[in-house]
Image 1: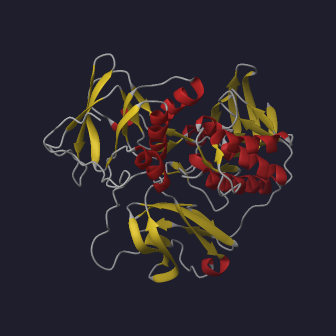
Image 2: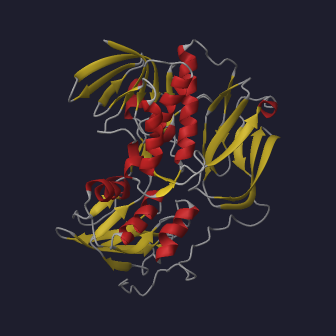
Image 3: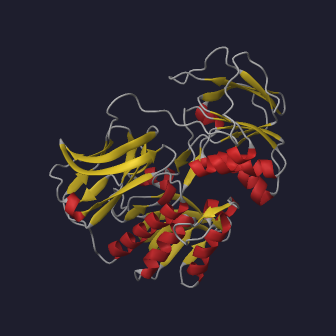
Length: 446
């Protein structure tokens, strides 16, 4: 059996950042396993700019951002083994791998960092009714076809879901000559970053239909039409609000799932709120010596946050290999009112500080984040705007952590004094209001 001090599963931005951080902490036997033919992960197909503003204080494309880390790795003895699939990981940190060049191998790791990223929800996951014709892609698959393989996936496009990949593909398809007829979002707010709504939809006069969904797919061999309907507060289609779009392509941008099949096989405890591992503040999982970071832990909105979190996991893995283990009793964070999840979920008492990441469940304005220990308020952070598509974070220094007497403090959103939570503003397209459903059933011919 082959032995390595630190094995990192995934050669994307998370894996590269974790490896470099561990190297800088003195670990000299580091192996990165990447199933694709080259390292860099999803960044390789993200040819648009907007990456690296926090990390490098300049605007980079995805390949440029990945290239910065790959250049740093080249200055070390970190091994990157591409075209290698990890088949299994067990609780004793033994990995079973297979590759065309080396065949089957078993690797014993002193520590493991999980950095497998995430995958897209497919049509089967959301159960759209209708014909099983060609022309239906996840937004990420279409992005790879277009940006890496050089294939144009369609000419008249409807996008279901307003996640960031879908928004970016609306712009990309338009720039390549396609007509993007609409972006359709089930929720009353967009799931993507505000800047992407502006730059990818509004700047190209692409209408965004909030509180709408696709209820039927029509076509024989190739997609011919999709039927879109408005939905009520319970997300059920409203009869009489149907619109028919003549199109040859439907792109799905309906959410991302952390890639945790290996984590589950190993017996790592999974948080049902994030679909990622339960971790301590140093990103260690329920199995000692196994750490998680990046989108395999929880879906991020900015790669800069992925890199920062992964460096934390890499440093913690290096400390574990030196025999340094956090001590102190356990604090379990609980997500309270309008908070979907919190990462980390567990904190050791006595740590210097903790940065807590979370997402809200609805759009909020002029409110606050509160950390509560029973009925006692530990901290309060004002926020002008929060939305589910944008990850939030707060930092609790030692002085605040020491005030927590109970074992299960709560992170919650301060409820408004009166009235309901306001709906998200519906973005306009160059001064024009967002297109609303025509209850007459008229077929748009954009």
